[in-house]
Length: 306
Image 1: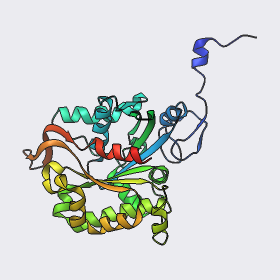
Image 2: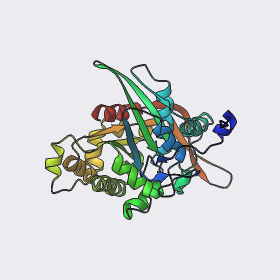
Image 3: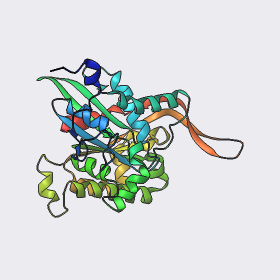
Image 4: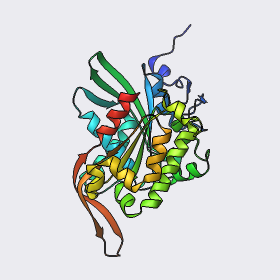
């Protein structure tokens, strides 16, 4: 019997795997899951990993800073100290980091994330931590959802299966809120934040009726509410929890009553930024220099809770 040569072996289709997002079987040579549009390369990367793998969702309104936060998070993790460092597990995870870092180096913010799920970038990295009882490795898997898609999914659950699947699987979530919009347009941002928190509770089957009992147990996601762009909002930077209580009272109270593990944080990427206008009058916010603050702290807190 003639054995296949190495080139012939390389030409064989990849082994079938389950979608890391929705669990559907992926049997064909396709780039994205036909159900949820998660990249098949992610599922293959996840299938080769061992140990605990945790989905951590990043949610927020459009322009809350999700893309910049995620891309810079991976960049900081890759250069972090030995006691808390993260490395991308495959090439596709570096795409988001490259997009964000390149834009910031050119003194601009990356383009808005498209609504089409098959165009979203995904982050998959292994976080290594040094602890008293020995080293611990945790795989972090997070997509860069579009803000408009999140809003549509929250209003009509099931429109974006990837969001629904990932949120329901997430052991930790970061809910990003634009601190300057919260300060200047408090009620609208407060109400949308509460809708997002309600959606999270719904996907994890945390009902108001049983919230008190559920908060006493360790199950349920850890929720970090992160006020972004705090370089332009000192109130949020100095006291995130007090800022939340004063400016997003509905969200603050809902989280207090619903989620056992939740905390408020403040973060910023630009040390300062401003709005520039071109010759046509089109305005665009640009970073004058990059000075990340508070990017790692929410993730450190979440990982300590899972």
